[in-house]
Length: 328
Image 1 (cartoon, rainbow, N blue to C red):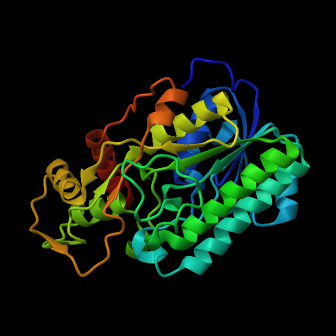
Image 2: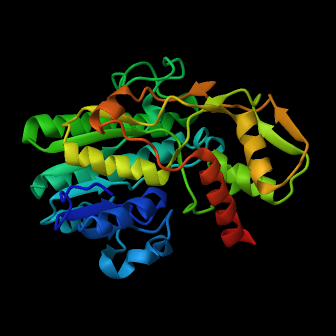
């Protein structure tokens, strides 16, 4: 946690707080002394994610796509951090762009408008690295949000986040709201709610298949594609630091330059799990952008060179423990 007392007594609304990122953010807010209200429709999340702080927060099972709900929950809040979203892995996202675009626009813009009407002073827009085009430079700096087309395998999600960023900037300029914009790169962690194979993100999907003894283990793409991964505890801690800094409408990548090939990621998972499958790479399947990592120059400057606390090896061990809890 930050050593400052910034959060002490702050009335904070976390939209979608029972989801994956919320499960790491909300306990840190409580630890910091915030008065936290969590609103979640539980479509893609689980109240058990907040079991450690359930008696220390206000929880409302409501849908943030409803304007009346948003007006209700934004009342008297000082800070809104809106994590509400529908985000799935590449296999599902690339063929459900309309569904994902519409859902994410509704649960983001509706709450932003309510925050304006209720005079919320500070609003955090959770965008995504999916706003960047497939041919973005790597490591990717904070490009203008409408540079090229968004990532092709997550196009609906990328467009929703682009429009969300634009709306946040407009509201800041027109109404004087303090709006943070952050673009997370591939956060992962153990509080992951399994939905199905086609909706899963890369690390939980691979961990589950390795742990279940799939052999041969068939991996989409060449295995040469590279990704930066950041543990969700670090990602959400960074979000809190950026709220404290109050950098209005300046987009900030939440990710770093260091990346790993998918082939090496699979080998690392197998090593930690003690499994030895034959690994096959299926180049007939899409693999997304060949390389995806963040230029963290702005992030380091704003966070006084924050160093992530959970490395990939430790995070993978946590994911294996997640599998044992969830499926054994």
